[in-house]
Amino acid sequence: MRQRLVAGNWKLNGSRDLVRSLVGDLVAGAGDGIEADVAVCPPFVYLSEAAAALNGSPIRLGAQDVCAESEGAFTGEVSASMLAEVGCHYAIVGHSERRSLYGEDDALVARKFVAAREAGLVPILCVGESLEERENGVTETVVARQLDAVVAAAGADAVAQAVVAYEPVWAIGTGLTASPDQAQAVHAFMRARLRESSAAAEQCCMLYGGSVKPGNAAELFAMPDIDGGLIGGASLDADAFLAICRAA
Image: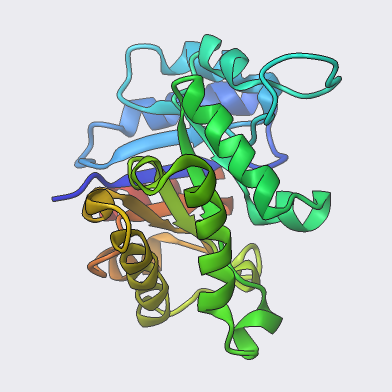
């Protein structure tokens, strides 16, 4: 069976108290019927706090973003080597909010992916379409463009060895969820796209992100090309997140 990863992206939420209590609860429950690889991605300022709380547990630490540059005059940015130094294993690149709110294009996302890999991090590459794009029938065109940009910069094998998360923009924080069949169709398309240039495509860990909850996780994760989830809001509730992890 392929690796299954459930990553909790806390977005712009948190405090020291939340980190301590939430990570503590996750560590305490991590061995309770959970066979998935699990990661949490708190805001930058809480990474060291989370790393200390996760020490000795099987839960990995990840960052919500990473700078495309390794060093230099880029005030406010955090490099991949810095993230690795504080204990990160993963780095999310190309999250839909980074693309839509901060204007990150495919080329920048690809550079961030390369920077993360060069520092020894495992990138979690996010791709996905807006509601308008889905309604216009161009979902595969959009996802292929986003995926191909990273393949061109890093190589298909590098992408296949990373984590790819399909997050339909219209299903993030809206309560809407792609049906298991809709999500599977896009995941199968992504795997087929990678398979065209990499024999490692079958081993690529592909996640679904978009209002995953304990009530729909098992059905989504049962799809043949969905290997787990990139969990947002539900990861701020330890019981809900652990239930999703058990479903994986």
